Image (cartoon, rainbow, N blue to C red):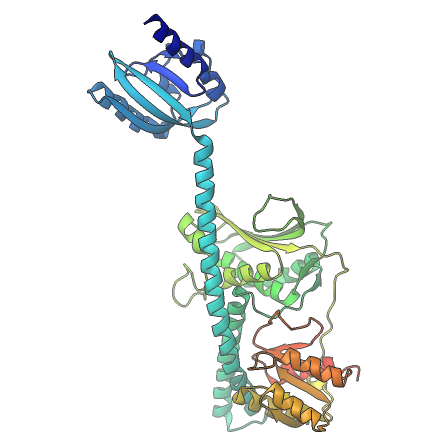
Amino acid sequence: MAERTADRNELWQLSRDIMLRCTFEGVMTAVNPAWKEVLGWTEKELVGSNLFDLIHPDDAAHTATGARELSEGIGHARFDNRYRHRDGSYRWISWSTRSAEGLVNAVGRDITFEIERAAELTAAQEALRQSQKMEAMGQLTGGVAHDVNNLLTPIMGSLDLLKRRGVGGEREQRMIDGALQSAERARVLVQRLLAFARRQPLQVTSVDVHKLVEGMADLVASTSGPRVQLELNLSPELPPAKADANQLEMALLNLAVNSRDAMPDGGRLTLAAAAETVDSGRRAQLAPGDYVRVSVADTGAGMDEATLARCIEPFYSTKGVGKGTGLGLSMAHGLAAQLGGALTVQSRPGVGTNVELWLPASREAPHSVERSAGNDVRAVGAVLLVDDEELVRASTADMLADMGYAVVEAASAEEALRLVDGGLRFDLLVTDHLMAGMTGAELAREVRAREPDKPVLIVSGYAEVQGLAPDLPRLTKPYRRDDLAASIATLTAGT
């Protein structure tokens, strides 16, 4: 018996798991040395004290229930709870307990690491599911938006030409104006869908964010109304960012409108921008590097956790029917991701919301864009027009003819090459990008191989990365005559 007692005492001293003996009320009568290593408490500090003083408040109830069951004759029990470390933090302990001689004998193993790893795994799995869901939604919305763009192009083009030619009387012209306005609203909606799907064509340049945000201040203030106080907090040492200035303006305006709607009784809207450096592992959604962080913050109603989890989903909105498309955050999210940045949202009910756009910093000087007037196009010569959608091709041909061009149409890139190889003389190639067989970009390469200086304009519902060289001028569907004319004027300015 003396030997067995000695063995138990040695195990008591050597065990890396914590051991204790206590009353059913929680008063500790003995603890082993492992308590010092695991939780920082010494035997002198613990013996005679009550273990319930160390238990996390949220775990006290079920621990008391286990102690009561042991006192009522249940031989043993297993449960997990959290104990306070001497430094004030908490550790998860997994207990095996047994009652004997009116006392509780217990052995506890520190499972904090396993609990944290399991929580991280669960979070990673949830993030993966969310990413897969958003990717699937992006594929669906991007494909649908591309098809809608093809439908809108002949509608907008035809209505625009009817308006220009003054077809019908005053009543008919009002109807055409109304139809054009509806088509323009549809175009904006499709652009937002493409932004969410990361498929809108971007003209990425080096953008002076400080100047851009300052330039938007008056527009944001007038849009927000007199009850919203606008504040600018722009870092004076702000590097330029890689972005599409027009798309960035649209995204910030959409975010500002969301903030205004979240403050029906007024409040404070803050537009801020600062330079940030992201180190490895600091933010999972961002690669290490230098960024410009642009934020839109409000003191409005805020979002609960359920709403926050879904806020960037397309068409998800809490504003009610007819009060928003639910695409503002979706568009901003898609834009940031397409630029190689990210969008983050922090919000609390009753406190407000802060939306941050993280844009990659640029080492180039800010780029200024001079827009060409569409009506200044010098319509001379012949255009080879290629599009496999007959209605789109017919509408574009009418626009080109209205400008004064002679138009030769082809229903595919292969047909266009046959015309070129057959001796067709033309001054400008206007081609759709996504077509059955050869793409517009591939056609452009073939044409330039034959005639290197031939101007080429690519028309696309969205920008396909594969095969579309960044130096190829692009026009986004749907478009009106002035949009087409402006693109051609820019393209032929030096010819």
